[in-house]
Image (cartoon, rainbow, N blue to C red; front, side, top):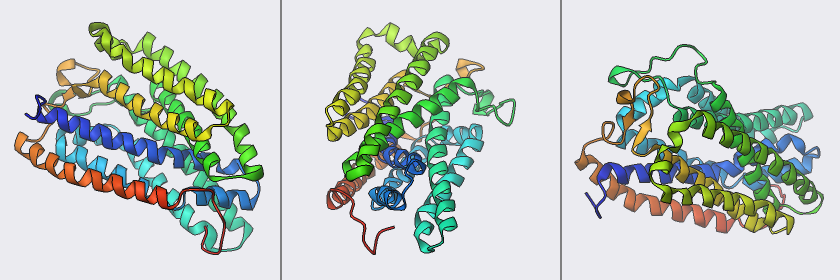
Length: 343
């Protein structure tokens, strides 16, 4: 135990922090990719692609570290999680590979059909990646058919495509598109900038509708997610902060303060991840068959000694990754300029 907090809880916070960082960073470049086919001109597509060009692969480092931390800290959770959601994770892996290939291959040949093909692959894979992340999150929040010995005993091939997961998928996609539009506005100018201002308004509407429907469905049909709030009313500060952060995005966008809007879209993602953590803790995967079969931070964790060693490693490694990330963003700050070395 450290500072009055047990090691599994510390590791829960570490994993949550890493995945929050990933959602914020890869979220905006998934969102930027989702808008890609809305740009008709070749120059505009190149500018949008080069806006995320120096950072997209570095953003994925947070996913690798987060996945490794989950495996190291909660191996039981890792095994059941990937067994239960094998199909969306394989689709996610396929699309993340296709997206990387599209980014690198697009500019290798001058033919129009070649570029259009990779434009479609890049945009569609970005959309699917954002959507699949939401589908996975929706299944985690709703619960999964976990039986004895933490074995997944789901019914069918598409068991993960339930209504709540689909709603969460669209909410995640809309939030990332909103986040991505804000980011592109910081990196562009001229007519593309004006077009993105119009697209941002559509993204705000898309997110508002998706978020509202998903929230209402959660309150009506997923009652276990609000149990902690009923027992501890002080936790209501988290959803209030989420609402305030989200409300600040259109307010700042209306004033053309897109740097502030981007900041609050990032804060919104972070606070939503905090909200997920509050709703789940100390559980990691809820069983819809019997609460006794649920996986929590205690029955899924590695030994305290292992967690302590890994916490020390994380205390050294995480600031290094964060420092590298900040350095890259500072180095490539400012508007995009196309040259012979651009995508």
